[in-house]
Image: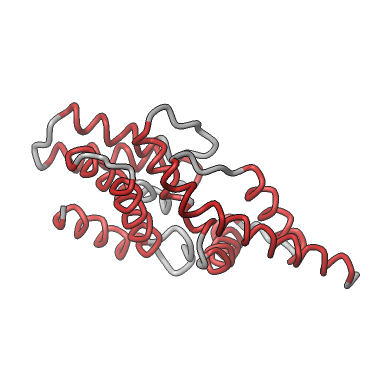
Length: 197
């Protein structure tokens, strides 16, 4: 696994600039950690946990090439890498399907897909929410040219938090309360913005 991690880290270093303030190797490491934690909490066996970890490492690697199709690019890059180290085709196909499951708003079809989806958006239920939100806002402006006022961005966050759900009971138990707290903070700031008009 360390070999794969080193390959992915090198790719990020060589192909991602500071403009990618959200989709970067730090985010990837966070998703890997959350994937492993949720898999552990849900009692996933080591071989499936390994597939999840590989998928988490590759899930955003295609973002610098094309933000809109990065899941597909990441899936293909994982296949190329795993073929180069003589991995089994069935495992490769499983990794690819897990990467493609991180596409939003795709609905997961099995427990492993649920785990990687929950891990990818775990920050919504943690104290890292505002850091993640600010990083994503800056990235959308720098990479996609999308600029929002503070109030517009709060509305986007509120809508996303209201529509989002964690799929696994493990993630729900650990993250739902934090997500509710973050939503309440967003709504409070929105209410304050309305009063300040």
